[in-house]
Amino acid sequence: MDTTQDKLPVLIYQREGESVTEVRLDGETVWLTQRQMGELFDTSSDNIGLHLKNIYDSGELAESATTEDYSVVRQEGPRQVARRIRHYNLDAIISVGYRVNSR
Figure 1 (cartoon, rainbow, N blue to C red):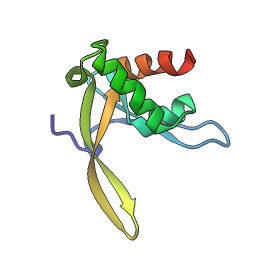
Figure 2 (figure 1 turned 180 degrees about the horizontal axis):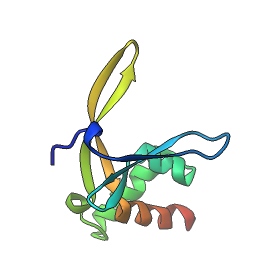
Figure 3 (figure 1 turned 180 degrees about the vertical axis):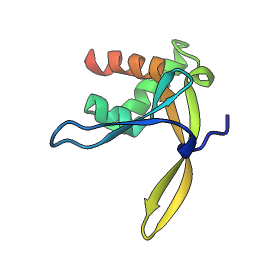
Figure 4 (figure 1 turned 90 degrees about the horizontal axis):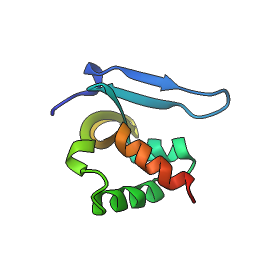
């Protein structure tokens, strides 16, 4: 699926004094990056990546069914650059959440 950022609704969530988390909505589910999951679960994106690897290696979820690459415009120095960033759907987010919070 070739989807760009300006075609999809994005929810912005921020508690007072905390960082902003943008939640992408597409196909009746939410999508987060590893970095965003790290912020959500208060852990590193490396830790999230390890849990995702274990989830996919064990066959708990199918990577092709739970991931999507979206174009995201990012500020890199003085210029804005569009990059394809991997996002994970709610099934993957919940699976990671169980693993992160069970330790």
